[in-house]
Length: 155
Image (cartoon, rainbow, N blue to C red; front, side, top):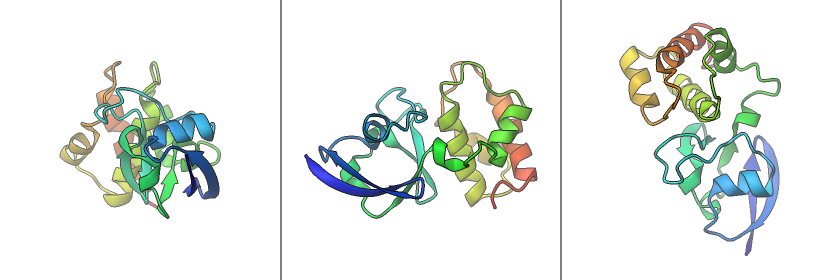
């Protein structure tokens, strides 16, 4: 066990964990931030996506020891009231079905819009291709990202 000082959702946190523990399990088991989901465990489905310094990363394969002074943002930290433009667009386009992948989808989409405020269809497809939705709401996801882009989600 080791002690790690990390910044999660703008708050300094102290966590005692094995250095090889994936960030996903630190978030869920140590900090009770359960919005980030376990999907495949091999960084292929995107359910565990969080932001590390504003970049979408898979938390299931990211050891807590690699976080250092970097800022982590989870779905809980994207907005206090769930009113981020991407979250609002998700509701407007009725993207949710089972909802399991949606936190990861939203985190990937919001990182995309931060780096590219006016993505093309190709940009959206390339970025979101790493997030799997078993319910197949890909067209609604793309429409929601376009709506969020038009509402200024990058700011």
